[in-house]
Image (cartoon, rainbow, N blue to C red; front, side):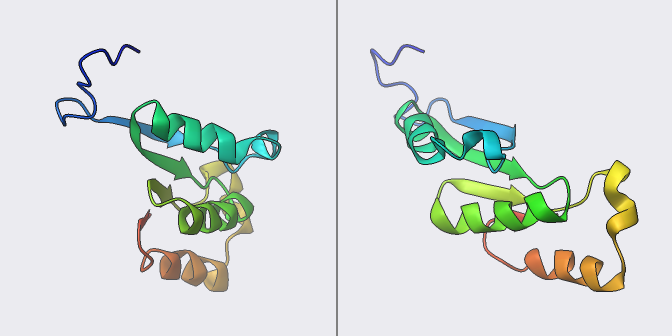
Length: 102
């Protein structure tokens, strides 16, 4: 991506990663460097997706650490059997937090 004219910093274009899984253990070694590098490269916002309860929990924690990260909480249809009323209530509670959507 070229930034010769600073077009992404001037608000002409806003780059948003709309579906990410940076909570995945594959990023444990370099997650911070990767996310900071994306910010420096002009990615203004990232939506990290929780696909099950475990990844939703790590997504919520990541959102607390990075002000440009948003979290989508939920459970993939193939994992819906893990839900009960208590777990669904917990998911709903997460939506009240800043930068979290369901």
